[in-house]
Length: 348
Image (tube, rainbow, N blue to C red; front, side, top):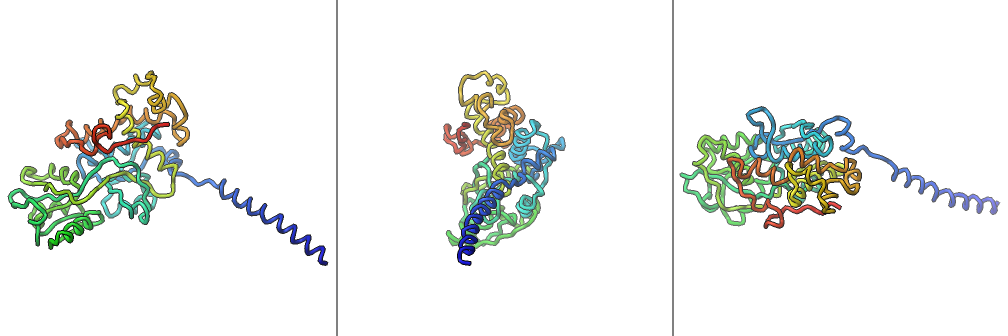
């Protein structure tokens, strides 16, 4: 009896590791469908944008979406489909944008969204590279005489709920011991309308948004954006956390915009650059190496982006720079080699 018991124990000890190994193998081999596969099968990208912010995302007079955030969406569509118009845009307000991404209603959020710790962890967002370095400001009427935060003591300040603006303003005012009244709205249009009507002495948001919104007011010249910058606002597109394959596609699509400008590749010369002997340019254009196929794209995905959308400098100039009424200096949004913060990892 003792002999059979020993034999049974030995047999079980031999089987258990095999079973555990099989379970590990099954788990490792289990395939989950990436959002990239879903997008390819659908034949278009669904991108969440504001649609209310000239320069970033808005509907132009010809009925088409335009702006820097819109061009980021078009860049991803170009990378995947070789077609920048294979995009369906969804207008989302600040409150509903994260739910739309988490629920899978949209594939990509490109909506002047600040990259913060909580959004990258508990909220469940995975951010792509920053596409616009910004900071929060406050706009007031010139005839109010207000030129500093201290002069907003006991004044009403409008903003939109569901943004970082509320906490940033609260932190600054508390630090400076300045009492004020915050008035929040779910609809950004109502927030600005309330300010225009004089029911708020100031309105606060990212400085780029204030600049954009000021241009749409009845008399833009009557409004002043204070010099004080009260926060850091790195604006970046985002995808839902947990899909590394899709995140790679969006991340390297943005880096393609930045990298192309650094390498001197534009929508005008991208075809000619194919004969350039520079190894880095060859890898970038996909004429050497297999960088694209490693992500589930074609090796010339960066060429598709630049050909259809341009490099970052072209995108910036077209939407915010010298070719627009904003004429906004690039500042921090310039290449690292020109004193800015834009920097792409190597394409290798």
